[in-house]
Image (cartoon, rainbow, N blue to C red):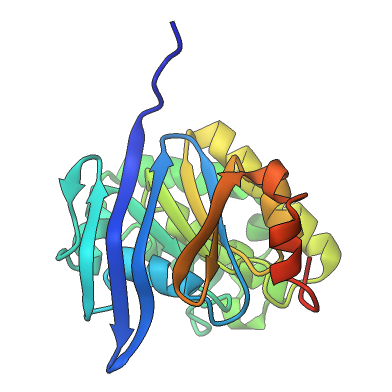
Length: 244
């Protein structure tokens, strides 16, 4: 008998606004446990707004967001972190005046299990050797790729079940982009993470993803298996002149 996939996140008829400007129009999507799901689309399609809506950064929104079948639409960001949702923001945001170690410790601010925190710090250093090398260096002095790893590792310190990632390869070298995507896949397998990723580089995102959603002008346009959408002429048409 075919096993039914367990749904971890469901978005129903999500609309969102920045002040009076509507960005999203009745977005519907779901993510199953253990999947890597990408959201792609042209610039201005509303991709990042979906992640910000899930994580409580967008106040003016309608519709419903369910996490493990529980309504989370009205929860605050710190409550979402406690429930098991992590967020890696766009732009390699770190605390520049704090060391790498202090940045990672900030990611565990909702936790009280000190022994497990220490263990997780050690495991992340082994998984990302760059962290160990710069553990006592101020994060603001690191390269862009290294700062992105710090931002990702900091989010992992909250022990998320669902990880939201907003444009993780933005501004990185081609080599660093490939390395980061490989690490993301390894994290999914190693930690049984579910990952929802917004990415402008559609080719890399679709090649990595189990499934993907394509947005256009704040609306659902297409959805399907990642590598099938990679060869869909409708997707290629949307990205003419863009990064594909």
